[in-house]
Length: 639
Image (cartoon, rainbow, N blue to C red):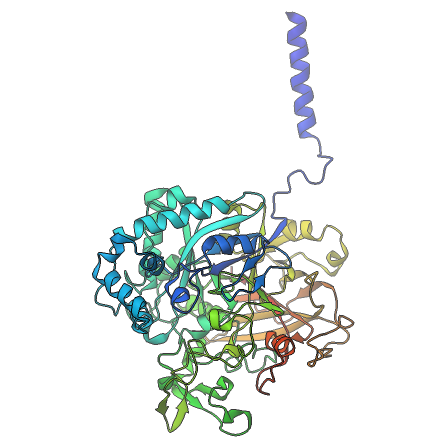
């Protein structure tokens, strides 16, 4: 017995000695995110009322998941479709308003047909009555007198969530449960997608909160708060298409007309950590009217909103040359009195506005990260320029899709300021953008890890290419760190990643940053890496500046051959690893920094179409463009 006790004591001492020694394996203790995952959190299937009424009656959420994970799918028009490289995660975010109802009515669900609205809509279907679409649009804003009850949605939501669980494969492919909340007062986009961390069992404890319940974002956030507290689950919202929000996405007042206060700021930051910075209805990073010194600001720019109030706000700036075409939307701009809407409509100006508000009240309501998504209503999360399946049925690949309009061209136009403005046509298909995807730095490909990355904002947006970007900020980085093979280790050990706040400054004079950007392995080389900085001034206003951190030696060159829709990768760089120190730092003022990576010029999807289908494109449609990535910011606040 005595010998056994001695042996046990020796083993204990040996074990503690081993554990206290320096670890040999460098990977031990490295708990930071190492996996770059690609996905889409904003996609619609035939369960969305608008997708169904405008032609997608067949492609289901299941088809969307199969396509995203790399399987071949037949599009609504009968075209074979497949991604070159599968996605790592997907959320089908069908509209909560009338969720799944049209398909139920088509299948003559007896419970739904007993309701006055279900009975009337079945009649519209039988008679091919356009009032079906009209009443759906009215219902989005709560302008429809009768609707469906919450109980009517219970079996639909149950079926949808259980189907998502079937496609979720932890470690292989993540299927997220979610939906879209879709208010659009006077045509201004206030849409959000709601993302659940949870499985079907928890998500089924609620019925989706829709725009019929309320068109106020504060009510949506309260719904999310109630869901978390009542179920033990967790959900967040992500805003999108701020570019067509009419200035309402990043407002100075809340939904009740009261100035933004700390309570609003805290609520918004908790429940809405991300903004969708780019997607099919245009790019939301910035606009040339508010970033006049940025030569890359005018990228996939939209004017106006979803369409119902453009005549009140837009004016035609020219009727000569390419602007003879009244559907050339590049020839319209906001009236002078409406220009304030830009500042509340774009990501960069929203970040600046957040700093300005923080300087006044001590809280920043717009401290968000960014992602990209598609918002395709085809059930196909395809955003590559040469593999783009559009937004709706009429923008799927085919001859003439470039010139056609969403919902059909040639509808009545209205008069404003003596000019014809095509408000009857929501948009020409050439205007839509083949964009985008979300890049997420996560520990594992699971719902929990992806959701946690969303919350900490360790995310970035691309306009479609899978450009990999790392971005770190701190006070200790140096030029030598660029050449260290443990670049990422240094990033986390000496600083903070995208989506974070810089640590306390101490006696350091200026923040330092490390950036790593690598091209899409199947795509174009990179032309430049930039840091965009915003900061506050003494008078409470804000300013911005774009810094070129790294440039290829042949920046500005263009190898695109328009006739063949091809380009060459004999210009640009495959990768940039960069160090940058802020030369204009003022320790007394708030600031944010984010990275923008820009590719060399490549053909736009419309140019690929012109070659494949033999279309001759109007000159005002860009033949080439420079795709890009945007990171979530890193913020600085005075100590």
